[in-house]
Image (cartoon, rainbow, N blue to C red; front, side, top):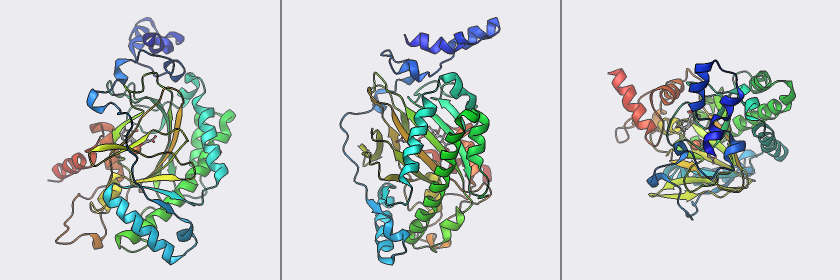
Length: 379
Ligand SMILES: C=C1C[C@]23C[C@@]1(O)CC[C@H]2[C@@]12CCC[C@@](C)(C(=O)O1)[C@H]2[C@@H]3C(=O)O
Ligand SMILES: O=C(O)CCC(=O)C(=O)O
Ligand SMILES: [Fe+2]
């Protein structure tokens, strides 16, 4: 029964008498138990108007071949930037292929996710994410929120491009998980380096597409201080009641997502949910709130979510590109005019991150709510 799985952990732990009583009431998302559970704990049941709908239409997204751009072909570059411009003004989602990321690295990145998430809960909790922090292992958002919980586990870590020789990801995972899992750290260190490189290339295309200096955004994100997140969605016996990731816009700048072959990503466009089918050769790229602000509102950060299913776990790897902490998020002069005045105030990424972590449960209106908050603080 669900309640048993919830109190499982407490019963394995030795708490002083009273603490144990409190601890037993605590909700714990133990995927190894809950994946078989047909009575879904109420905290994971979404309101009717947010429950997933069956048979959603496919989103029309351009499949952009980066091969020509990466080898310096100007015609291919212009063509890619035109497709990107169109997609980013409509919904902010596009796919990239021939991206130059090693196929073995991608396969390993998926394989090591299985290695990590299939560990016993106690072992994963060595890297437990703490309330108010955004890195570490989280089994759902139990402990942070009490309703509309996501049916997933995540492992998140920081990647900084500041010092090329530092092995931040490798050191973090080694420190949390120990020597036994040292290869895990190596794989994700390499993966983050590949994602940072790819995102700088995409930044160049975004700059071309917006008609600003070609190097503008590449330089802005050159020493990015980004977040890597591994999303693991266990099967759910009642997938029509739950969501793997609830509707949200990414507050970050650019997301490069790789989904496995299972499928579950959906995007809200023209008032309805659309799916983006899995394509193992491709990365799904989307504009986040911070880039929407950098583009002075020209490019959209769009609402999306992930649904789950009853038969197969699903994995996705998300690299969230973020600027260095002291960079001021302000649009380039070319994107501001009398006809197109500033839409958002200046801010830094740590301010927006703190807002989503401490003041506000981020959802579809995060950027607007945050802007109002900054403007109030400034006045
Ligand atoms: C459900 C959520 C978790 C998240 C904030 C959000 O409401 C929507 C986006 C999520 C994300 C993705 C990038 C990293 C992160 C720290 C962020 O700023 O937005 C996470 C947030 C989180 O895990 O707390
Ligand atoms: O798993 C997915 O397909 C989407 C995940 C996502 O939107 C996120 O991690 O921000
Ligand atoms: Fe997202």
